Image (cartoon, rainbow, N blue to C red):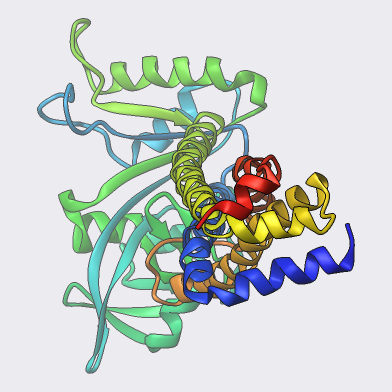
Length: 391
């Protein structure tokens, strides 16, 4: 392709700036949408990994059954962790916890935090480390001690003695910054207390009970889950035809389900972005067809002075590609700028991904070639005599 053809293609586009801009606009929106979609999809996957990073593959979560099909009154409680630990085989560790939100304050500083009542196994099973101070001990559990271990974010806003639900607690330790979640709870914003204190003084029946069971190996997860169900039904004295008042979820299934949901959302959004690009491609094709009609006489002159059919074809395809790829580059810039803005305002979880810009730009180039070919072919096939006669 000669330099003269490239020069003429740019001159033609710049001679109709408004039309060229409007032609690119769809591509810009489509590519920036693709980048945003992949950032949201990657953010969702990262959020899933962060949520479950404290769970090993052999973890089984047991919690009270809620919603449709649940029994009227659940007897499930944190102390069922002891029942599971003593009566279920192939279990390496068990920890029970009760979680709920409560107003936590010191002086005039007040904010809602996740308050979690835990036993002495909670920190090791959940892979949580103490940055300073100490963890909760058996003595704290036995005495219903009014003490707490704070997450790294919570401790920046609170002081050595805090008030939870109107009750004063002494801060005895601080957790390492984790950046992860334990179910609905942000570990860094958690206020951890002895489970007995949570049940009797802070949360009571409002808390959500969760037991984390570690099977001795991944191969034993199914068997352990079945045994837990049998033991708890017996412990809760449920009739044969009665529904369970608890439910079990293994870590592998939870991660797989959450990742599938994130992938499905990403796929749906990508399809929407692809439709936007296709529509913008049709717009480019229409503009190029109008351009061919307006420049019929110019095409006739070019052919009359020796312009080849391939030269005309190359020039019009090049104009279409320039429109689409320039729109793609602008879309990439806008998309990359949008990611930190979305993250800053916490509209949704996003994470930058190289896949988005690559696919977005590749698709914009393809749109330029595909939708620019027919107008270019039509222009190259014009008869020079008929073209010169046109008005």
